Length: 161
Ligand code: HEM
Image 1 (cartoon, rainbow, N blue to C red):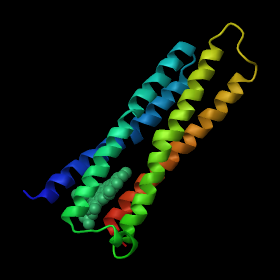
Image 2: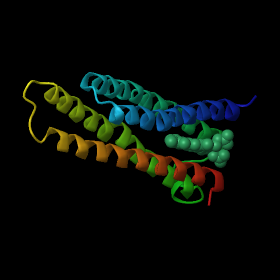
Image 3: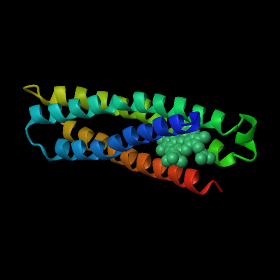
Image 4: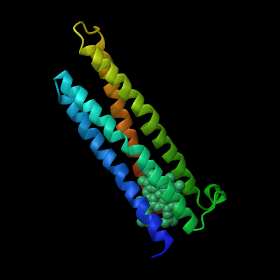
């Protein structure tokens, strides 16, 4: 077994972690939307945040194993702007994915948690349900964008144009 096989194996484990999130996220989100009881909604929102913790670990595994793949395949940094430009593009898409997964989505999750706390009070603000709809809409957009980015990354890796 060569180092390439080892790094490819860890890379595929990282891909599996990302796909777990891509499927689990919308399923937990659907529970969050369908649930009428505010406490159950809070529970689903918490679950979504816990599952989201997988994303930094998945990103770390993918980055380290991806660098391992590059070393084993003798792909240098300079190649990202030339012969391996597909990998350069893949890395740009990966950084956008990271930004969404580690900055934007947690921000939406925090805002929703605060809003749910307000809704749970005796006199909730009047516009709280509209605000929740807006945040839910944003979350849907980011789920879709994440799927598109990962599929583009996989296509780039398969076809290496
Ligand atoms: C969401 C992020 C990523 C996904 C879904 C992904 C997916 C994949 C897949 C499915 C393969 C093919 C594995 C095989 O041949 O068995 C692969 C190969 C590879 N990946 Fe990634 N990857 C990601 C991130 C990265 C990152 C961050 C790097 C670099 C730091 C990287 C570098 C590589 C390299 C060099 C290969 C080998 C390509 C070749 O066979 O010529 N990947 N990736």
